[in-house]
Image (tube, rainbow, N blue to C red):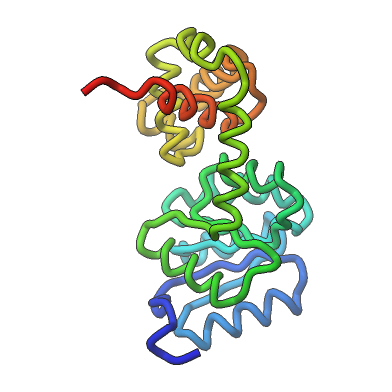
Length: 225
């Protein structure tokens, strides 16, 4: 790879969370070769210790790490200013990819993708952008189309209160429940109650599905100009 093709990642501080020591050390060494300041973690305790020592700008989490979903939520809760990128994802595990997307991560990296692809995600996260590969985008769009094909999405969305719609828009923007609570100056449990009621009314099980239904309604009924 020529120098001009390397995404601008130098100067970023990246926390790599992976319970495989060899994989973790190899990844941190590769990142350091590109001018990235790195630290490592393998469980909740080491993750928290690394964040306390020096807040990272980007967190790379191998979702295959034991308690990966729990660690993901922990990253989002204790380091709200850091951008989280999930790697180790398999294209045939659609529900896992959707769950990570709905959590509001900044990047999704498949096991079939390269280190150069990961550098691109890190560079984008460092600039405040959320992104994923065309393969992941296609998978997420298929989920949107499948939900759009379900009947009665319009009538279900009309049942939402103004506050529930406000929270749904913030979820669509990628905010976590804690970030929404902070933005709206309400308690976290209040947001969780609204999200639960919203999912029930829409007849879906996840935040990602709720956003898909909401987008499908807007696609069918665009606002009048």
